[in-house]
Amino acid sequence: MPIQKMYDYIIIGGGPAGVAAGVYSARKRLKTLLVTESFGGQSIVSADIQNWIGDKHISGFDLAKKMEDHITSYSDIVDIKLGEKVVSIKKIASKEFPGIYDFEVSTDAGGTYVGKALMLACGARRRKLGVPGEKELDGKGVAYCSTCDAPLFSGKDVVVVGGGNAGLEAAVDLLPYATKIYLLEFSDSLKGDPVTQEKIRTSGKAEIIFNAQSKEVVGDKFVSGLKYLDRKTNEEKTLKAEGVFVEIGSVPNSEMVKDLVSLDKYGQVIIDSKHGTTSALGIFAAGDITDDPYKQNNISAGDAVKATLAAYSYILNRGKK
Amino acid sequence: MKKILIYSTPTCQYCKMAKEYFTKNNIPYEDFNVAVDDAKREEALKKSQQIGVPVIDIDGEIIVGFNRSEIDRALGLKK
Image (cartoon, rainbow over all chains, first blue to last red; front, side, top):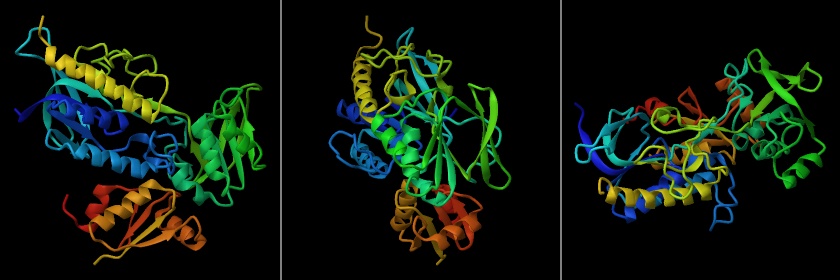
């Protein structure tokens, strides 16, 4: 039997939700474990975050560092397992209280930990197109980080898939470099902010294609184009391009908890927005893994605070009639 | 001492992480901004056969992205 250590509160995730949960839990003097592969969450790739309250401008890198610094300052009460990935979560019946469960969390580094309450702050990851050629040509023209890779497409034609804010921002990142930008949107309108749309429309470099369903990333050694279906005419067309930037939203990292808590049809953990509770007693959730409609750093942090205060009260009172 | 070259772009956060990692471990490296340096951009592509940054060249061993465990292994650092 592996060595187990008992915690009050186990937090999975090191983005804004996980770190906010850790700070509040530390201040409540809960014996806390935080397991995360890295700090900062998904906005770590952002070169310039302008809506993190209190910072007019901050890079994803700096925000991640500030978060790490903040939570590490509570290392007297918060154990941090950085670079570890949770591989399983199990419910185990509490020996103390009938009908109440503890949670056993195992990581890829071989650690097994038990907690009285669990915070799911595992976030989400980028959605992929799921079409032929995408995987084979990943890093060979298929790109998911426009802030990183846009300059590498200097003088080339590129496709951006996705007309939401992320897609529009990718197009803007590419404007100074690419010769021509095809912006593909599945529906008949762009969902991203009008200000950004305007920037793209007036650039003279972009062509927006609506009702387009991506079918295949074409290329041998490197990307040479994208095949898509014109959903209006039912015609298959191919765009010539050397880059395909995929910006079609995210998928919640909830596979591991699908048998523990209720998920909605998108795989998001269903929470009660007042207390961050899930369908399972003792399991709380916040941030991009949840069905909260707005995926924002500030919201993730705030929701994690609510959930942690609720978890504190749960831990104090659990098993009491 | 192994010779380390990093091909990066200024807005790439993983490039920053990689550079900071080397700095923290007191390992000198040479950094090329491939957003402006066309020749080095080509060189990075040729070496990695990929279009992405960072490209990290550790004595001829090529690592794409900030992969800490691969970097440690290439450097001969213990985890």
